[in-house]
Image (cartoon, rainbow, N blue to C red; front, side):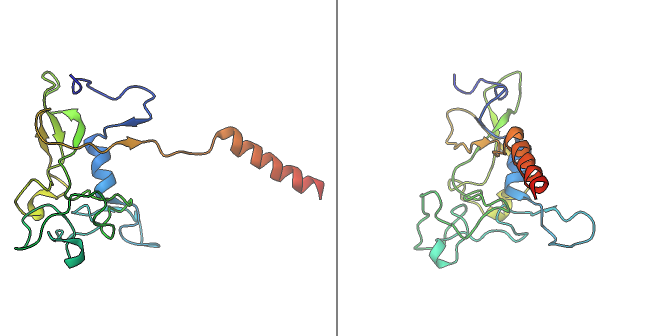
Length: 177
């Protein structure tokens, strides 16, 4: 069964994010209160669209911000990834609201690995995003239910050797003057 791995493999380059990683990617903004704000500048947004106001269901060209929830009469939810490029999480992620339910790394019951935590906002949820997009809510899905996956990866950083080499070159240039 492809759902039975309890945790990510050591050294994995890509993985299903944990609930904490998913929450941070969708709701945490390191500049929530702006540059130069006193104290800790970071903070959480209630909704994954960099806002404390619930996203509006509807087509992107007609003021919509998500394909989750009930659409106004005559509008059809778009299914293409990236249909709302103007609506992003603080980290620039698209489609955190709407889309498919997304599996998380953790199982609801680790002793019975048949249901993972999931995001609850989805194009398949007819109710309002105001109820299901909030920061504190997660659901659960088994392997036979409609679910999507958002993969996480390590942000590439320069090799310590490369940084050291550049530093030594700069020192060498200064001494040569």
